[in-house]
Length: 251
Image (cartoon, rainbow, N blue to C red; front, side, top):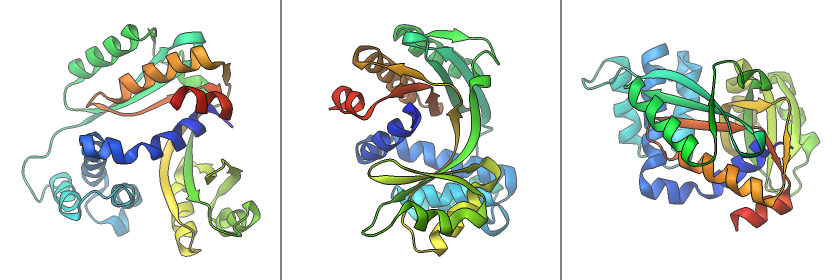
């Protein structure tokens, strides 16, 4: 399992705290607005929007906030921003490769904030393409474990929808697919009665860097600092952190 996977499950445990700060809600609403602007305001004809709405609802974003975001994105309401997707690349402590995904209405602000957060936490900004080749873009669905549910049960439910593999991450099952099959896999899982924790298009590392406690703590500190920026939507890294080390540095 990758550091990304363990960090994903850790982040979901922190979701309530993030929501109280308003950070998570704001980022999810922005994703909904951009999805509506890109593919239209009808979730039935816009799988990206359907997934964005489902994720927002799973984190208890109020329906009114979601509806307004859809209307702003589709042009029914004024006040929508011109957000731009930008990905920044960097190296962190111990040579860990890092990808930073932003949605911003101010490219200069985003670039400056990301650079400062990276350099202040022991990282080094990298040229475009120097890090991204170490990752593959995939769909990742996390499913809550229930009594008697096995990997084979999950695989049977989602295989025909495009699932490539199912992994047991302890508290959840992780289903990996091509990014283009994410929506179909999420729908298949829901139709099978499985409880969906999250469904995201993710950058999964093809090469991982094993991390002991000290470098792991430094990498996670950098990742948290970057994730806390308003323009940042997601941070991916290729550190491989064992369960014992992850528990040690996040306890």
